[in-house]
Length: 300
Image (cartoon, rainbow, N blue to C red):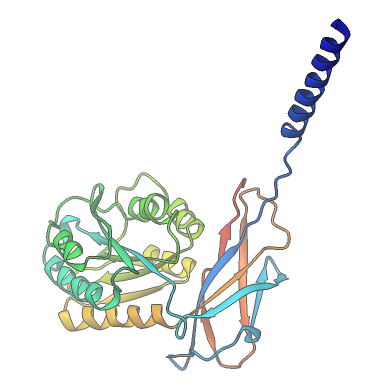
């Protein structure tokens, strides 16, 4: 009888041990990282919207990459749009803020598709303030815009960094930041490099409107650099409803006429290094606009 009990206990021990050994076996982890590009093609100042996948070649650090997928966003419209409108409300904008609000409201009315696209409003002066969180309701966004009041300095880098890192990084679809500002940064805690890195890491395109004031010199060099580094576009705009309105219309056209290309880097090392991107098109005379690279993640 004792032998039977011992045998039963032994069998139970083997079952438990085998089960533990199975559940505690090493887990093999694989790291997959995809680079997502939004590319604008123009010829003689007009958008080129009939290119095919085979027309493009992608190079990263000089190494040709294999395209995983390709979408022409002029014809494929299901990708959601996620936008953050950054409005400079520093003290120097008091004479033009009402015009910026009016034209931004009209832009949102025309570009947002209900239950598909979302936008948020952030103001920046000496601080960065979320005025209206993500919504597809234009009326809520307009209420947020109408709350803006001028005052303080210009924390441009902080605004770009926080919008990218805290609001857009975890979002899907196309991610856009539109910046309205009349000058350069004067009081940010983060650097220009950190702001650009955050935008590139979040796959964000920056569109900048440098709003000029007559008789006042403005330095838009850094904002222009940010736009170029992310594949967006920079505009110098005068203080008039017509000029601001036309600029917003051009941004809308630009967003609607892009190509979306993705690839898996062949030799990524996950060391946080900057990796340079070069896109070529086989058709002659075409100019391309896209982000010039990205910082690889340090871990996955």
